[in-house]
Amino acid sequence: MRIAADDDGISAITRQTGRDALRENPATMSRGTTREDRDVGTERRVAAVRLSHITHRFGNFTALDDVSLEVWPGEFVTLLGQSGSGKSTLLRIIAGLTTPSEGQVFIDGADVSTVPTQRRGVGFVFQNYALFPHLTVFENIAYPLRIRAMKQPEIRQRVEQALARVNLHGLGSRYAAQLSGGQQQRVAVARALVYEPSVLLMDEPLGALDRKLRKHMQIELRQLQQDLRISCVYVTHDQEEALTMSDRIAVMQAGRIFQIGDPVTVYRHPVSSFVADFVGSTNLFDCRVSEILSDRSVLLETLAKTQFRVPSFPGAAAGLACRAAVRPEFIRIDAGGAEIGFPATVTKITFVGNVIDVQCALDSGELVDVEISGNRKDLVTIGQRIEVGWDCADMGIFPAS
Image (cartoon, rainbow, N blue to C red):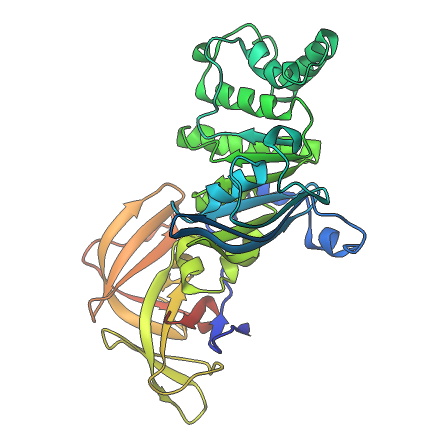
């Protein structure tokens, strides 16, 4: 069991693993920049992007509140958050499309806070791709080079190289309307990379694609980024996308970064109930400490009067409000020997292919979501009485706030 105390003196008891995105996905098997890469010689290294105390206001509304972040060379960092969390505003500030109210932006060690977008050396891929409909694929990709007054032979060489990188050989003469969604996305990426920027910025570029193509493009984009060893800042609200593609994830809410870390750490060891609930699926129980027992273990009681015992944690005291979290994949059905267990009734079954989501109602009326393997032989049925349970090591306990 791992117990890590937070600033409020309440522990996070976690040992949680990923769902679809953290299972054997090719994009998660090889990370461009490891923690060891960042730790070795950091005094000598210069961050590809460094944000220092960025604050931005729209009138009386604070969109970003004192945000600091470093992105290392060759690293893929995802800004993950709900709509309105400030992630796209932060990306636009890096690009120079928005000027922050306070703070500084550094790219490759240089302060670019007052430098215009076209001189920052960044490539930007927009959510809607922003392709010119009246230009061919070749001319769309060549556009950044023409406004930089490059000569035609170099333009042709660079565009042909960019087309090859994104597997669009022979499509240079087509127009955007003649391309599929995935091909349009590749053109947008090629245009952003053609002038060899030091940083690539992407604002939900896969949002308009269907699920199957989106998953394919996640792997393709990640592989391209690794091949080019380019630093990338990527914005999405899709948790699975962030887990699949990133070296590190910055979870944002209300204009602040709540947690930043590699995908496994963010998923298995969330620092708050918000992160636990937002990144992946989680069962949350609002609780209070009912009693400190003689062996120093803690008896928790939910709002519906369900009680269960957990190991002692810092700050535990009678009457303390907290939240308990356990992910569906760690709850077992008919779990003999589980440290925490309750009788329940199956109320809903959803077949999702490789997994089956089972919703159960405890006798208290509280609902618990359970995930079981899709190839399980002894399937449960609606109305069936079962026992659900989990171990303390698979649960997190967080401040009620």
